[in-house]
Image 1 (cartoon, helix red, strand yellow):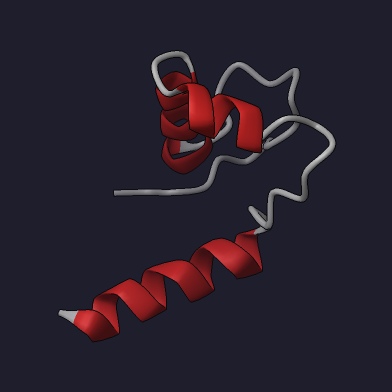
Image 2 (tube, helix red, strand yellow):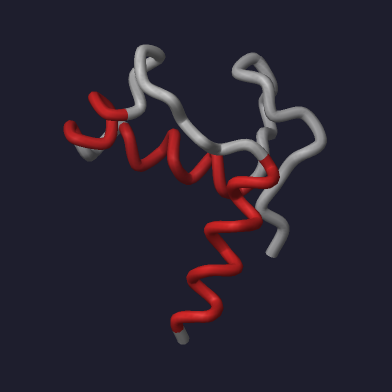
Length: 60
């Protein structure tokens, strides 16, 4: 399952599964929506995404 899109800008219609899922979940989770507001760092760069997935994989 690909996690990154080719164009991850806010105006892109397909930013990859990871960012699209996060955006979708923000609609239903007030904490997530507030926490991912522009004033907060997102740490969702491709390198950060790879690190998160690597750590989760090691926990299995």
